[in-house]
Image (cartoon, rainbow, N blue to C red):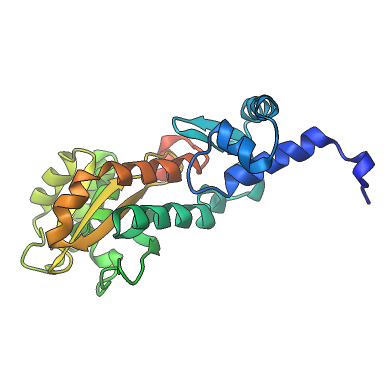
Length: 254
């Protein structure tokens, strides 16, 4: 058993920094890490530089996030997503926009719902049709598909039935493909999946997996969400930062 006299303080401090970054729903600055861990700012800077150099942390525009080497410690494809971290990101997005927040992923050629953060004041949409049959009618599905290379996108659309869910659902293969190819970074579902509900989504900018983040609101609240759409993009980036990067082809094969 180790005793306090045999412990290496710098290693202990570095591990505290890793714990703090890993437990945060957003990138952390050196100053916030110094405050949270109680270590002097110069010491924090020194250890953070070392952890970045070794790949255990990475620098994001807003601060520090876990690096590839820290992520691969858990091993296997499951390390691409950290459920606790991604759920915290979705919860923060829900609270920021007062809207249910969602994460979808492309799994074995199918778009599936991976996580939802909702509340009494921001309820989720009634998921009355599974994503396997409704990706074409949801912002989450369209954001994932729009991020795929054109051949993969076309293959998905042409091999899935475009079910007519509401009077607003796009059921034409060519119309849907044109919409997906002309995406401006965001995907919109305006009562295409459920009457009275609108959804805005953005693809997760990652080569580790294909996914999307979205929020849903009553249609009348869509203008307010559109004004704050950068919050959805920021949440997608935070989830991307937490996933180790792989060659692009690994995430888009369907």
